[in-house]
Image (cartoon, protein in one colour):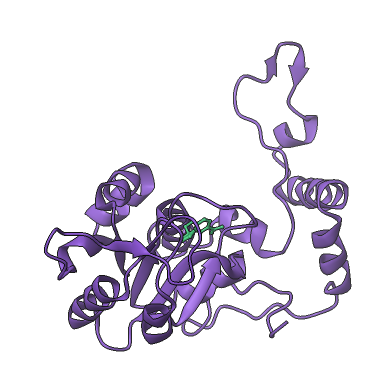
Length: 254
Ligand code: 4GN
């Protein structure tokens, strides 16, 4: 999967994907991330990309021209139909389900804004989808873009090494993760739950599911309600094509 990121701070993107699992996935050719500097496309003679807003008000806005021209140049490489996602507090809130849907794309273009935002006319021309990481405002869209790239990359087959990964399966059923332990068996007087040492996989699985359900009920009653009301519904099997790891609730529109 190929990500293109339109940004005024390409080094933020480079630094963000050059570590850990994303770096390994890039080296293996499973994903690639290309940061494109919007400033390289400005026609303004001093290299400016920002200007004052019509109607007044504080702060600067990114002008339409460099954003639009940058996007057209990226689409020459990514393909005319590549989906353009703008990261903004006004978008629909990102979820695991959206990550799964996006992971089916071959090429993706992410647009990062700065200052007070981007001229609405450029957004109207190029943006297919607007996504928010949550109800808070940041100085730029780069950290949300990196968050999206991370969440989507780990769903690309091969990136996590274990195709039917427990990590994938656990949030996939709409429940929070169960508690986990590694050596030593006892630490600061706290013992690892006995059942995890038993070697009885069926019992371990049952214990983990119970823990997940209790924890979800306690910490995320919204997820718990959704889980309980979907208990009788069928979770689609892996078909080898189409949607992977479908989130078993709320798969329609809202
Ligand atoms: C996205 C972008 C928060 C998010 C952002 C979010 C940059 N802040 N919640 N800041 O996903 C005005 C123009 C603010 C771009 C935007």
